[in-house]
Length: 361
Image (cartoon, rainbow, N blue to C red; front, side):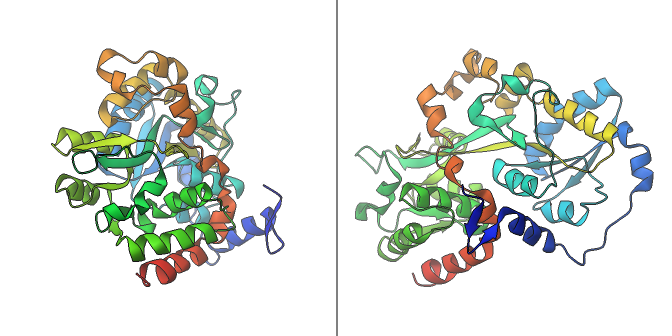
């Protein structure tokens, strides 16, 4: 995208604006931790089963092999801490997806990933590599379809607007993942990250005319799917499989315009001591190993990103295999987004969503 994104704002302006968000926040000294930085690896991420899986497959074996201690900080939305500690960061790694990694990476808060510094990076499929992150797995995301109540083929995001599904279609809450899904579908309708008019107009129609419902998280979505209160909604591929295994008559479809795929891993926080950075690079390199990714896939139900692992899935994981065409479709819309524009105008976009779409329903 052009260096000037909107109203004369340059990327440098956007970066300064992002850093200004943390103005006035006290910086916490960590001299004692820095002195022993190479002896531990400090990771920020959400808790729950995902943290347990990451720890079991990647972190605990790495800590044992390298004789270092694991230090965790658990919780959601920890990016403000990274911003506040930009000069003297206390943490080495933060679990994230490609959107947030791109935004904070552009602000200089995360380090780039390069093949000469991150082991195994060259083995990762290009679709799952970004400047500041490469996935240890990816999460196919498209449409979840009730095959019992919907008899015709579902092939497009536009199928959500079919009057036949009035009151039985749903969309994720903005504060969950709805913002990113909205931006992707806005692009499918001809919009851009700094022109959301096509998406706003279409979603006004979806909520006002088709009585679209809001789904708040994966568990809420699954409950509605299993109760067959909703018959069509954006959802994760693995979560669709879980709902099907629980008895819901559902299948996963990648829309012809392109699906989404969040690329999950731990971004490397900048401005740490060099020995800590070296250790972090070694750790993230271990998450790109084919055998470890296959082990992780057994826990999560999400496909690996290592090309060797993708092509040699064992029999019990063959259901995760994707064609080259499907891989290309996943993330197609996200790759057309400009993350810094989304970041700069996120408050304005959220306000428009709430006032023009949700409140006007």
